[in-house]
Length: 522
Image (cartoon, rainbow, N blue to C red; front, side, top):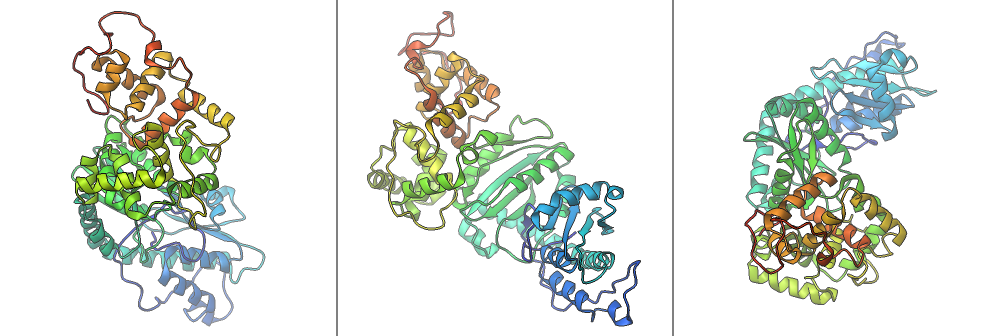
């Protein structure tokens, strides 16, 4: 297998574990042999110009090596792993064709399909153009040789790298993100946490490590891959813009399916909110189906980050958050994600009084009521939006009477989105869910307002989660659900209109009911 960053061309690779592999100090001589001869003995040695170009690219990264092979072939090239799919591809769009060719080499006579001959079964696929520098078979052979050398170098330092991954994870879990960032030596500000469990976590760990070999450079998305007790932990490290985590999630999901693991994945979170993301991923994994990866935050394909056009979301978020500096944004996100000042304070390493003071200042700067549930949901959506490339020129005010502003999505499209999302819920569940979300996921006050026993409301909320196939313990999930419920709410969606059937599960509002554990706290 290979390692390295994305330099030298597009890559379909999901991410690369960060490691300590030493950079190549001298080029490695390579004898390019293959079925087709190249005129002149000198062409077989490292002094051959195109072999020399491949060697220099291999010294940089695996992605750069594959990109150079594509250039020399005057076409495209891709490295395909049986688990990860297209590890590197130049251009990125060639990944799909390369995967098909690797699976059925006999059906791709016009392509050069070359086994790398490593223990992982990786395949190099080259689509030559009209004017290749050398025969595609020779380019593939030389590239495969260099890939094997890189893999041997990675094997030599694997133990040390895995220990380093574990140490960085421990720093993040202990709430010391600044030390973790120092060790990483990169400008990673956010993390996406995946936690998996099952009988085959050790085998899955080795498979995942081979599928995403450690790189010699940082920048972009990198992964920590390590075992933590009985769990396989994968942490994608990236900048505030979050990048495209789809490929990372896809790779981890394939590992879970192949090794019959169950687990959860949290939404991207700032490094100093790692403890919250860690808990969210763990909660999502509880009760997850074997072979599946359950998302803790957001609504999956129905999530607003996918439904709302990215440019609109980015521009709106920039105008909403424009008055806030970095500390106020971090404090606001910590408070919204955790749900309380008491939980946010240790995550930020400040006192509870400091958190309250920052929140009061934030409310004044935004001219908004931070206790309003719709304002909270809108702010959490803005904080999760991709970072704008430049500061906003103006400031937008939050309007709680309009859950989804017209700047984000047209009113008709918003109602269609919300109606589709909440279609599985009947009137009873929709009213109960709306009341609970307006109470910030607190079961006791919501049950009192609805006139229900807490245990009854808890059972109904569990029914909602199953019907929607969502994890309601996630703050981000609750925020988007709140915006959806409020978007299609009618005057009849109030506790007084809750259908009554009588019986022990109902009680008069204001009277104490049976004790029951709440999803969001009692």
